[in-house]
Length: 163
Image (cartoon, rainbow, N blue to C red; front, side, top):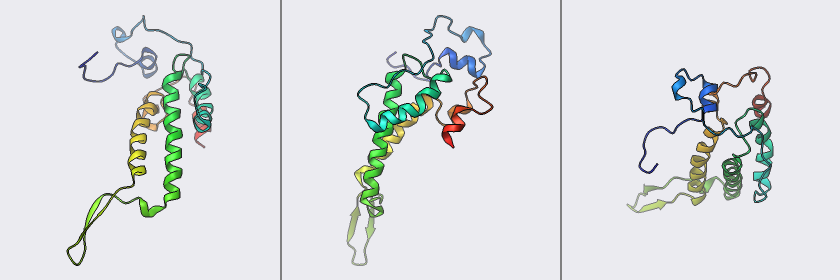
């Protein structure tokens, strides 16, 4: 809805996993796509495809990635790949290029403006965008803490991936 403010509504599955106490807040008519990991789209590059293959099966088994979530998850994978490429470019530049934009007073009163590397700006923007996708799919510690998946407490796939 245009102009809507406030928190976004949670999917019913997430409300049930988190233990929604008010039954009237559960949408019984919400679409229920099958919780299976879709195939990676053909447009993903090799880095994004590798990230897809790393997380999609796990998210599918946990019911957090369904047959209709491919576009959203591919957005995360593309941002991940872009982040990897920017990080590699920054590594090639070296640490001298990573300074913040500041004004330095020299002894003679001359001001030198040190500009921030555009790759640093781009990396910050990518990471900010990735946070949204990460939260949607429960890929961060804080977002996982809000989800309770039955049977995942023992030797979960998440723990295997993070080792």
